[in-house]
Length: 326
Length: 266
Image (tube, rainbow over all chains, first blue to last red; front, side, top):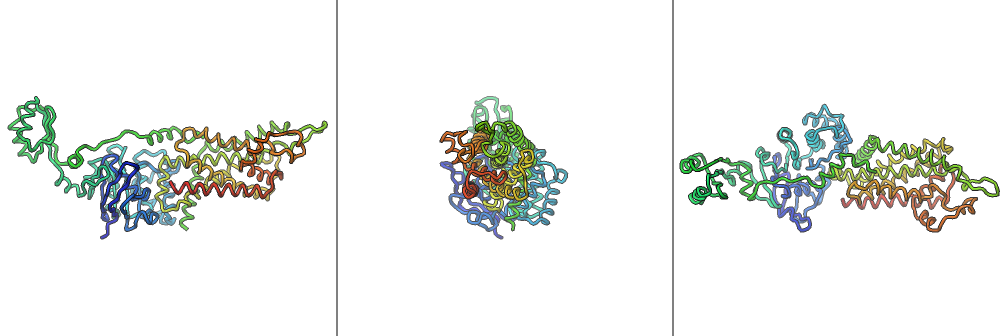
């Protein structure tokens, strides 16, 4: 079967910054595919290229077999997008936003009505159908955006950081919807995120940093290959720490002052370690294999978060009634 | 067919947004009242000269009749700026992306927006027309139809101008000042509140304008739009019809094409 998304050797620069460096990947039909990376890794750039907002400097990208550079309009009618920043009209009602979307995608009225009703039911927004979007909560707006992206029955759904800025419970809910959609409608979904715990449930994960693909596989395979169980030990004094570090030289992942991190495998190793050093340690914890550790071993750092940018400040200005300055 | 549906959707959205914006409506109602009722009635007695003890109007109309067509243009000018704000709003708050990733062509998106803005502008122009009886401007169906036609062309041009401005604005800060810096000079130098060339009137000896002002007024495209509206509503104009209509249509088409050029690069 032909992949739904084919990205071949895509490079994109913004001035001197290389946003994407020779990226190639395929997404199969019906797959829930995650693009994981810190902010600024190039995830959004890749999504924007696939949505025809930006053109790549080099390489080709196809969605549903259509070249997004050569035939952007045909490609657009086959994709649904939920952008990182909200893109709803908050002066229109929930229904009007969906109806507008259906109209500009050329969905005939009868089909439109049916799809809108179906999508509202799916994301549980039937009761707020006629409310102005500005009165909805952030989580509801996100759900509405997901529903909207599906009104024209796309083959491929792009979700750029769909859960950023949401509380844990709402995030969980959003993921439930995403999985339901993917399974029930055989939809192909690409999700970008920098929340590692969210990608565990995806079919395949692509780890990206500094515009390059570092790894691409199922979460289980990634863990098996790059994951590392880690024993974090804090000794009572730095001398003991140094001694232990010398003893397990091949296993030391980190050694700073009285703290030593060791590569561990299974309980046997932990017990052996404890019987040898148990009396000299202040604290000990075992970190099991997680995608977090996969990410750490691939990039050498933990995933980072970011402060509010100028766009958020402008949005705050808008909320205060900025439009009525004229 | 689906292009038409798309243009219609965008037009409808602009309309809904504007009609739900109470501030815009209040402005649209208060301006005509201010200009026609207060300015117009207040200055009415001074719009005439006295020659050998005989009272004569500078132009053969009362002041309120004279400014009435200009206030129509003024009200439409403000609405056009409001549609520029709507473009900035869309861009900064992400809704533009929703439109840009749709399969709709760029020209169709712009046309929908301009038609939507123009429709709202015409509505605001009609708010002024409602005051015609008070301004002592007799309305006939033919006049109204001709007036509507001119208003449409003007509204289309002004809304396109709003789009051009919006494309060059990055933020809302200072937009109010900027808008007023464009609207009021355009309005005041469009021969709206005083006739341009006294030599055309019977009272040419009474008022003499400095040359620079005459030049500015002649260069202002809005002058010709106001002149055309005046021609329709009170049957008085200072320029030939051909000049008025050429400038008006030229302005509309030109602004739309520039706006389109800008919009394709977004």
